[in-house]
Length: 112
Image (cartoon, rainbow, N blue to C red; front, side):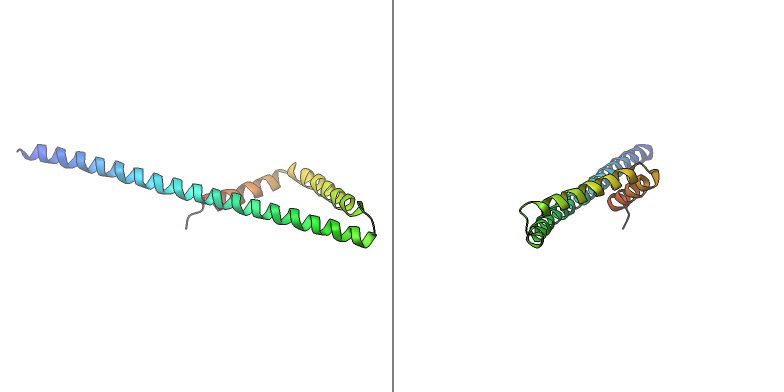
């Protein structure tokens, strides 16, 4: 077998190995990305449930303190409406959008 054929076979094998290595790296990066997104969604869900149950607890506490059936729910609802309005006003600021986007990007794509 001439040396040129061996060289060509070795080059082809090297390219094939590099392609397989690249595929494995992509699979690893993709699985890491999916894991981080899953963790972020799980933490968000747990935080949302904690907020929900603590809000109900606060509503019932205010109902008991105010000796009312519904005033605790009204107070907490209006405080959430005010909070939503404040967040909406902050969201119009590009600085807040950039900070939130940077936080999410750094959580998902940061290198170890």
